[in-house]
Length: 600
Image (cartoon, rainbow, N blue to C red; front, side):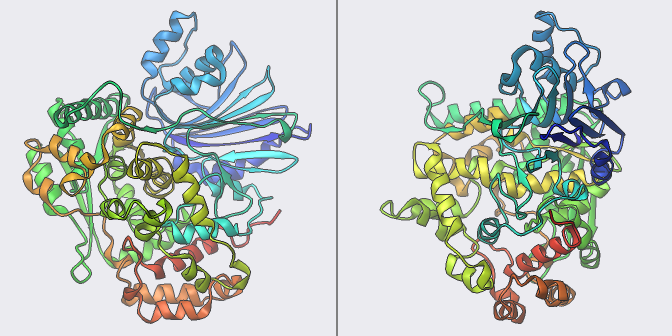
């Protein structure tokens, strides 16, 4: 797990190795163990390393294959690298390290662009092939690892975060009006390739981008994987068969993420079903001295700020080496701007700050953790899924989706922004197209597939990567294992949504976890002070939205802002987020990360 960056000149000029320094400085916290740079001709590559596999200096990056001359910078973990290595050795390839980075280089030498189909894990990488004079960029199937880029006629630059690209200057920092619409209607999700900034783009999950040094006209964008959400012709049929199949796939996923590491791997234990099940499966398979970590916050009114009563039950049952921390609201408010500064894109999920503060403490104990992200999307755990399914089938699919998910309808968006930012319903058109493009048998198959392949990528998955890597902590997400996701997508939606959601996981957990954890009401990773905005939090957001920078930016209609400030708790989204926090968060992110950046 690391931070990567690079530049490829497209105009025949040599790359500027000096551009790597500011980019690597912004990536330093993603990779505190080593820094590496390499440049030759039109390309310069940089790397910050978090050493998880093969801790020796031989595995530092950029890594060059002496047999082919290819050079790689890689962020992530390939869980099937031992099997791939044996296959490649059988084909005559020789290895000098004991890790997954070199396996990618040799896989490229053997299979070229087809190497990505053979990689099982989370990854984003840039590989320079000097013989073909082309740069190859790739991102994993579920977008667990980020990859941003900027492009003009002279050069392409890429990095693990938008901040690293901004540090290199020359980026168009104007707000993308289409992305702005997505941001405020899709819970801050801006589907690839867009970001909130016009000059910063991101490679979509399950895609590769081949960039010849000769120039942009010969770029090749390829999608190498699609999720198929249809009943299998062969495989599980009955509920019992589905339970057993999913259980077996999950066991393999958690074991891979424990075994493929040369450092201890802990578990972020929220007290919910998902993370508790990870602990239970690992303990059942004989994992010893499991390290578990929980965080809690202050209650606000009836909203609980911690789930310790449940996480304690799990830690006690499996005798884990448990750590838990309770963080007061004043610490949340004090550290909020710092957390926002480490968001590669603005994120409104309240648990982003929770993960940031938790990761700070966990990183002092371990370098890698397993986390339960993805279970709700893969196995149908959210309350809005049954509501969508209950809508009349005669309604257009976009309307069935919009009524229960969109944070704001288009009419409200038009009231929220000033005249220059008013335009068509970009999000309605985008989501309708995305739903129609899913390979799903039913409406709910397509909804869940859209969530897993698009919405989750730029919401909980991105939050976990950003907030953990800000402290040099690798987060592994077994519920987003390729095998688990592909299997679950084929299961009937009504089976997944039974029992109030995640029926298959509840069946697997029964008898393994305490009943209180399985049967509890659905919880989230709560920071109530960012949902029910009161007191110092309200004053803080008022200051942000009344600031000269916010007024000069001119995004928000002032009457709309004052309506939210007057009574923020009356204005929650359909999925229970604070609309006031959304406005303040975007403005704060722009102030902390963009204001002052050079416009191209």
